[in-house]
Image (cartoon, rainbow, N blue to C red; front, side, top):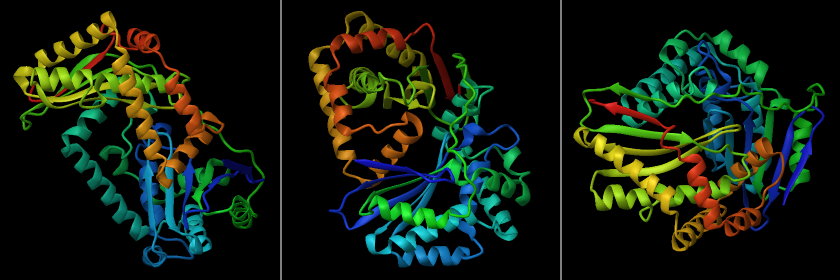
Length: 408
């Protein structure tokens, strides 16, 4: 069971207690990512994530590394389009030290000028590396066009044009305005009693003013399906992304959509794998998946194809989708997909990190606890008719995007 407390300062604290494990995962999650940025400050959340590790008045960068290693834990972070998370894993006897280190980093980072310039250069190298990576370049270009005019169009790492002109004061001001208790979620999974975590948080945040927790406030995206390409004559193959409207992370039918995806292209027994790779030999890489966000989603089929086979590949994908819509799925396919997804969920929840991020998403997006049993029940209750209906509603071959990246 997930326990929840809201402090006077607006910090939300959630925890799930597992006494059988002599360890824990602990995190702070910011309600903020690249979706909240604009053309001028694109990449600022990601650069702040880097700077959080570069020192506070209490600990310098070397201290942070030394303490983390001494605790025997794992200290890390990631920036996404809608959230940024900082987390530590350690054994339960080091809870107070771990909490102190993570809280000080997140709330009191000092952004030393010399470290800022070095880290900005590192962030720029990441951008160059992403540009050199065909997969990353393809998906970032796809998002840039599909979500044009909305924050979802911006890459998490930013663009060279924006990051290169960042200065320390600008980024530090953004950090101080956004990294406040009312914009953060503190979460733990493992051997941390909820009362103990709340007491640590109340002591650490006692001097902050009273506020209510913030919520997300996104501009609604208008997805622009289109056919487009980006030339790169250094590539021997073409990276092809076919996109459809998908479901949001909070949509009631999202678990049914997982079944749809599994049948379409999520594994070796899927329709696209069997048709594209096994039967026609058009591609080594073929898959489908959904990127789901707070208020929208994109469902994609992705492959890497020889230039002369691109048209045949796109036609084959379209034909298989039309076949699915015309004839529907079988009971055998439905059972196989259900079993696969249920196994993946149950095995995934054996990981504390997965469980913690699941609990964080429930709190931030759903606003309530969702149990593993509820998910399994939703999957078990899905029928052939449900999935056939979803194929007809969402996989509209007359309203889809097609993007080609390569020598084309």
